[in-house]
Amino acid sequence: MSKKPLVGIVMGSNSDWDTMQHAAQMLEQFGVAHEAKVVSAHRMPDDMFQYAEQAQSNGLQAIIAGAGGAAHLPGMLAAKTTVPVYGVPVASKYLRGEDSLLSIVQMPKGIPVATFAIGEAGAANAALHVVANLALHDADLAKRLEDFRAKQSDASRSMNLPGY
Ligand code: RP5
Image (cartoon, rainbow, N blue to C red; front, side):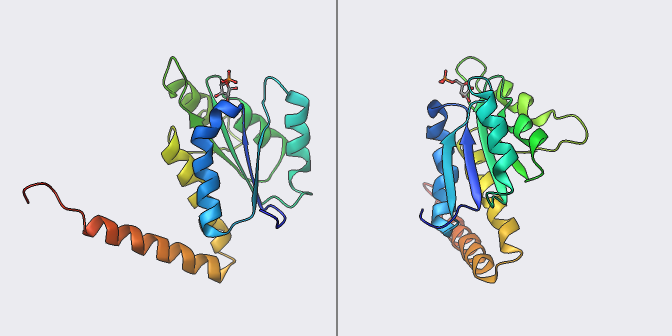
């Protein structure tokens, strides 16, 4: 995307990309300028703080942060910026993402992270939630979101079940 990013998609590792690419694809589909990068809370904490500290001045209106296991990235970003943070729990190898979910969702009072479902649905829905927020002040985007919903309803209406 060549336009200045409005949304930052960050993740703890490139192993999270299989999941987080669904957020990127959704923003791409709606034409929302975004960036995507690895910013690991545990392996590059100074970079993580810098990313959060510069988010607002860099023009970001939302940060979608995905991580797995002891998933501190969304919460620590939220601790260092008032730009809204949307957390995506990535499915982990041993606990299938329940660890990621609880790590992200159980924030202490005062530092919110909007937390989504584990995995692909969470990544896509985080992006859709960001789109909905941006659409409050962007009539063209609001129209694209309405169209997306209408298409989704049509697809469900035309679903057939075997034998019925
Ligand atoms: C977390 O550890 C990442 O978000 C990833 O989900 C998990 C495993 O990372 P890798 O060992 O695959 O790099 O920090």
